[in-house]
Length: 276
Ligand SMILES: C[S@@+](CC[C@H](N)C(=O)[O-])C[C@H]1O[C@@H](n2cnc3c(N)ncnc32)[C@H](O)[C@@H]1O
Image (cartoon, rainbow, N blue to C red):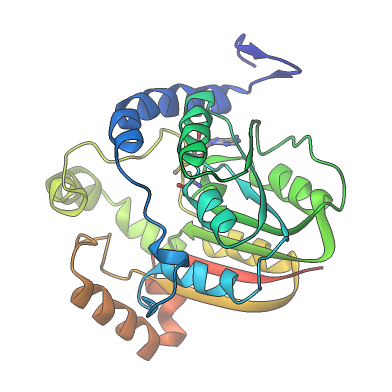
């Protein structure tokens, strides 16, 4: 345990490292985020971008009729998902470990007149009541937390028959072994960072590890009915930047054609379904 004590909690060493990283990250993003208008395209009318994991997640959620549903956003970062869900009519609560991120999320949502309850909290220990949420949304967060403790909390605060929606970075363990080979790790990957991410310092924390097929099975085991399970980004974001819609479409078409291999090839997984 570290000594950075917050009201009612003592952060673990991992949480402390995450907090330190995201504090700095929030500071670096603050000016840009607060000065740009927020983009609600993903919840507005119009054609859907089926090839894009973020749009596919909202297509799934918008199908639920969110009006007045109690929705929880886990590890909400700067509040983008929370704002989109509130815009779509949901009653949204959201939390994050980083007070700096929460402050940005509050300011952004106030600017847009959205009534969202943002709190500073850790995913492993939630202070929401039992059986409270109709829908729980977790995007790019499970690989930052203690997964079993977080699942236990998600199950506790969700209503029976509620909806869970996860959208997470992923790598099959076979591909992970290849990725971690000396040649790729020490030689190829460092050369590709700038090409794929557009700069030489990717947004990756010290402890994060992509979900594996075993953890995806764990996610699936929380649900009595799977309504959505899609893999995205075989080449895009791995070796090609996510800047060219035509390439992203092709990438998604390849994954659909090779669907039995999608769980091997994909680098992101979207899962939605009804909680057990
Ligand atoms: C990759 S960001 C994703 C943020 C947001 N879900 C999104 O997709 O924009 C990961 C977030 O997890 C938060 N985080 C890391 N560990 C956490 C924990 N134990 N409990 C709650 N939030 C945590 C970080 O502060 C950061 O905002």
